[in-house]
Length: 502
Image (tube, rainbow, N blue to C red; front, top):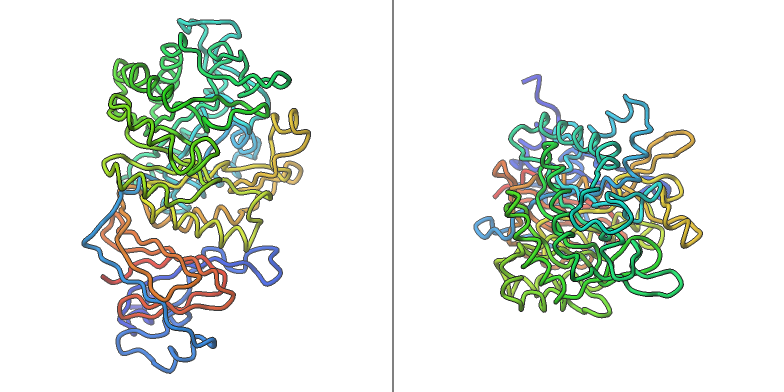
């Protein structure tokens, strides 16, 4: 009996096994006052079966109606394949420079299910993205259709060791938790495969847009497949691949490549899917699009709609990948309603000073958008850089072409001078999902009533329990009824409630 903590006794008294973990900013919005902090039941349970009505009545000075979350465990929705971010070359360089003990602690904190936040999915760029310390390439500069010059040394030397360490940490912390799922995405094909002969999406002065040259389709499929083989041979699990990052955003600032729906449909159906099968990689999911809910040329998922209209492309892809920078997440529900057999994954959702700022704004608004992703059929939520420095770098392409730093924000900020590490709001947003909802879990059907300013996603977890992630946007605490319990959510907070009674 002595081993039972006080919180366990209180939960027993209330006959509710629920646990609550909460994050919110301090009053001056300079840091977090609570950071994935577990509250004792006496601090958040206002009433349960037989609980105190007086405590319930006193909970909300505004006197508003109690929001009610009703869960139907018998109606699971989409499976969850992972929550995570990207170990970009920039992130890898920062982490690799840390002292060995610090580096090990950072990776454990990120990838351990038991002693960390349990990151379960990574999206890895194939070649340089916008966040690199320098340009690099995997083939020679001139045309090499047979890929005789292909060389993944930069990846093998700088990024693979950290990926292997992450895989090992996850495997040892949760032997039955499944592999570290990896989605791979190129920002651009090699320059010689493109119509503008540049790794950039548009030539700097001529503004000539770069598409994949038709005669290079086969070589590009082989190029992507060889990269996946490199990961597979190292013992990594490649869950999926996208043909290119953001095909409707070719520009002259960093590596990018344009693709139309017809071009992508032809590429995946006639080249990429057959190439993957020929190399024994037919289980790698091909995800089309990999861009915003809505763009100027393809509003409200039009790119996916047009690609799915091609029967061969439709058969070749496992589903679609999405970013949250433009449009509304309900676009994914619109796609799911028409094509319910195709998967939906969110593969990029960055934080930065161009958007919701650390701490309060990022915590509340970004978390609400991830909740919306889950409620609109997303099977994953992947943020952007795992780590950036105090200036939003390393960011070679931003400095070269924009003459300023990126303003992006990683899960972690690693100060290049002091080597101190700051866990940003983005880290805790991800943690509220990743730590409690492992791959193989499922989103559950639920209704949320009288819930102005509240947003909730509910999951049936792999251990047979129920967890809910709730954002409270209100400036005051909120009451939420779940079954026989009423819980108090702090103002402007992100909360995970786990061990919810069915």
